[in-house]
Length: 380
Image (cartoon, rainbow, N blue to C red; front, side, top):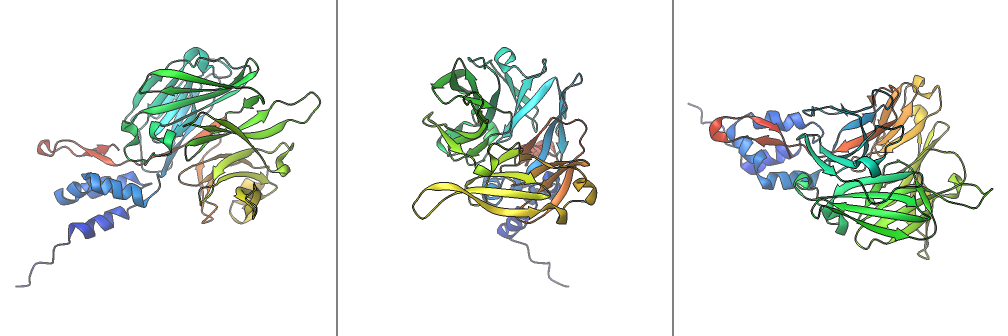
C-alpha cells in the first residue's frame, strides 16, 4: 500500500495563498472554502500583514458620477468585488483613499459641502459616517480629501485602515485668504488654518498623498490681464504648513488637462496627453540640490489603444495612487494604463461621466463563528 502523500507545511500553503492576485478578492474567498486549515491561515492576522507587505492596495473599481437630474455615484467594479450597495443617489464621489470614499450632497449644480457637509462611506461594509459642514464658505472653487488619520505623521501602513480614525481635509479660498480645514473623526470637530497670499482656487481634481502631505492642483490668483497660473498646493498634515510647487513651464499657461501622480520611486509627478502621446513628468533634484521637473517617460498611445479610441482628442482623467494606473478618457470609453508594464484595459463606458474616482483597498474575507458553520463574506 502506497504511503499517504506528504502534508504541506503551513508556511508553503501561506506562500501560495500570498501569490493570489489581491485585485481578485473572490480568489481568497474560494481558497478559504477549500478546508478548515486554509481558512485558518487566511484568517490569521499574520497572513493579512504579510499580504499587505507583499502587495500594494489593489484597484477594485471606480465611483462613476454622472450628474444631472438623476445624479448618482455608482460603483463600477474592475475586480470580483461586488459591494452590498453600488449606487449612492444624490451624492458625488469627491475622493477615495484607505478604503473609504468621500461623498458630497449634490442638490445643486455644484456641490456645497459648507451647507450639507460630507459623508464618508466604506463600500465593502456599506458603513457611513456623517461629517458636519466645514467652517468656511469658499469664494469660488474648493477641493477635499479623505485619508487615514495615521497618515498625518506618514505612518499609515494600510493594515485595517477602515477600523482607524480618519481625516477629511477641505481646502478653499475665502475672504482673500486660502484655508485648509481638517476634520478628525476621533475628535469630531474641524480645525482651521488660514494663509495669506497667494490665493488658490482649487479644482475637484483628486489630491495625491505623499508621506505626510497632500498635493492638490490649483489655479493661482493673478493680476488682471495676466495668464492664469497652474500651481500645486502642498499641505503638510503634521505641521499645517502650506507651500507651493511650480508646474513645468510647458504647462503654463496652456489649456492642458493635467493629473497629479506619484512615481514608482515615490516622487511627485504629473501626467498629461498631447496629441497621441502620454507624457509623465517627475520632480527631481539636480546636482546642486535644486528641485525641478523632468520628463520621465513618454508613452506612445497609438501602440496601446484601439484605433477608434484615437479618433478624437484624449484627456487624462485621473490616477490610481496605489495601483499606479493612469485613467484616460476617450471617445469610446475610459481606459486604465499601467505606464510601467504598458498594460491597458477598458474599465468603463462614458455615459455622460463627470468624474471617476478610483477605489483602492484590500478586501479580505471576514468569517463568522466557525462553530456556526458560517462561510466567508467581504471584509477587511
